Image (tube, rainbow, N blue to C red; front, side, top):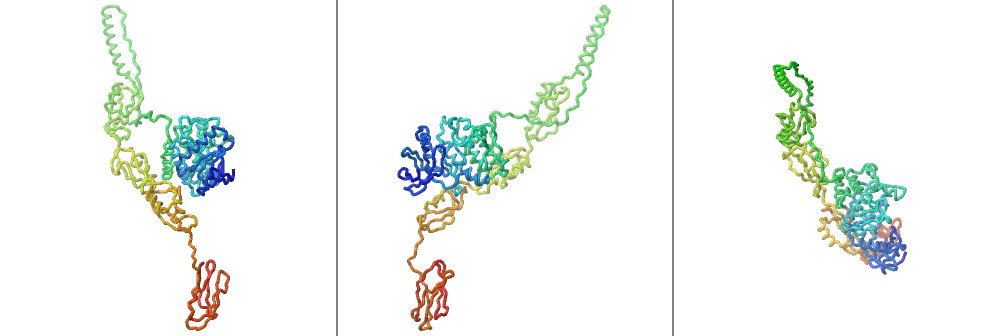
Length: 630
């Protein structure tokens, strides 16, 4: 294959890699005089119609993507049963090679790499293309640290039939999502899981799951939870750990919904590394929330339970004499004793019932509820502030709810006068780390922080939902906005563009033109950018200054020969003029003649290399010395 020319244009130079379906070669484009990468379908698959279809689908899918973090596709073709794709040639190393050589990468560097990978995936997903094989081997790091996602060889347009064949599992098992390991439905969230594994590897230097066989690794993706990356590298901030673990959730519904959410959280993590903003998705339906009962506080301890008096059984006396008088007397006495019995029973046998929970009820509602059960409500004169109970509603009760109590014992209650009013403190200008402590000290709660780009430093509060000094209910949530610093984006590639065109692009991108340094170049036309700072792919803010090195064409070679100008003394008619050349440690005689004063000045041709010193002597006496740079 080396030396073969494809399409009368691409000369194969050397093999640089290979995958399960294809081999990759470095080639030279004879038309544009540039290096390219050529992916060629392995010969053992060219007879397989299914594989050829996949290869063609790869070229069509990948060619539709155009993004600075995705390897560009230039051309596709077939020649002599050789199916090939012409791609951008990347000079650099794979992310896997970088991790092997360096181990765990720094948090900011790793986050920057993750942002660029995520940006590439976001673009692909927007075009309904799922990569399905995201791993550190398929991510190239250029010399300027720009990330390039490669090998969309198994990507395809998302459809309802996107099911991985369990007999032909594609990709690397160490980066598999659980649904890929099961051979199930795969979509954008499968890429999100694999991106989580890559981020895990970036910051720990190792993979979350290892095993003796691919099957054992796949089972771990399905059944086991990964060890928290922070236990491996304690320098990992809380936010980044949360992002990684959320991306690697086994339950698809608990992962990020899309890559855009990951990008937002990664950018937030650079500003609030220890912030608690990574939201976990709950198992239960958010619409089915259990409302917990309001807590209550007893006014006093349960009153001592009074001892029950023993019931007295009084038997009516009977008279055995059966006479009319005796019967009449007996009936009267029986009625009298029954009345006494009922009176005693009412006094000593008091009804007992369970006290209902009336916390949160209005006074009228609580009274009606108690009276239904035979209780009497005793309302305390002094009311209390309570942030959980509205004004005019029951804040405390004694006895406690569900406590057995005689109906003759009143239920004592304390009524709420609503939340205490507290002033809102000024939090604008404070660092986000101080907000929760400051609000808590005022009896307020921290609300939802949001972020927007601004001229202020990252992490500084620039706006609050309620103005300072306003009195609000205790426990009120105060939302606030944090500055993300000036808006960030990835620097554009200007090398190869004319500096005049670049100036117009800088205005559009809201960037500032810095130093423009001209340099000679035999290869780059005049006015074309040769170098730029910052480099393309670097994350920068608006209003950033960009410096350029611009070609001023080849260096002109002067046809004028250098000479030494020697002024002769006018008081001598005849004189011998001697000139020595001192070049480094070597001294040599280059001129010696007799002249008259009328010959002045003399123009003596000279030559040399580097810095040379010329000494002039008149009649063997030192006259002058002249340095010269060649």
